[in-house]
Amino acid sequence: MSFFDQFSYSTFTLPDKSETLVRDITRAVALKFEQSDTLNLFQEYEVMDGEKIENIAYRFYGSTEYHWVLIFINGILDPLNDLPQKDYVIRRACESEFGDLNGLHHYENANNPGEWVDFLHTPGIPVSNLEWMTSENEKKRRIRILRPQYLSEFVDLYMAQMK
Image (cartoon, rainbow, N blue to C red; front, side):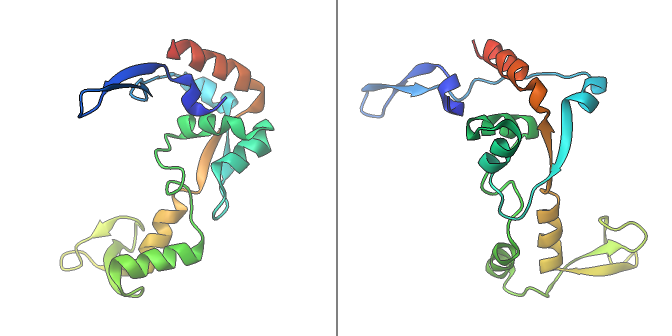
């Protein structure tokens, strides 16, 4: 079953006043977990450059069909861009966006890396465009994996919420 098969149909009126059936992807499901449960339910995983969510689902759940579980659990909106990219993709995107890979992007607090500072008022270390884009890419690397023994229970709970 694909992720979108879980959504019911709704009637949508087209500009020419004709109607068509479409999947109602606006339906929201919120599953809440107790903080104490999250230690047992999930494990962390480090996504490799260019690794696809379907491959991760296959590795942990034995099927690419459960990629939607990983998308849901991690709040991924765009599986193509919300996971880490290969270095050459980052370099190309940096050149496209900024033109100069080594150009100054911002300054960071030397005592608290990651904290942006106004260099005129607080001493800081320079961060290049490429360093910044690489850092942003690295933030996408760690995701949560629902432990396989909880998969069927999670899917059942999700499906019940969809009805």
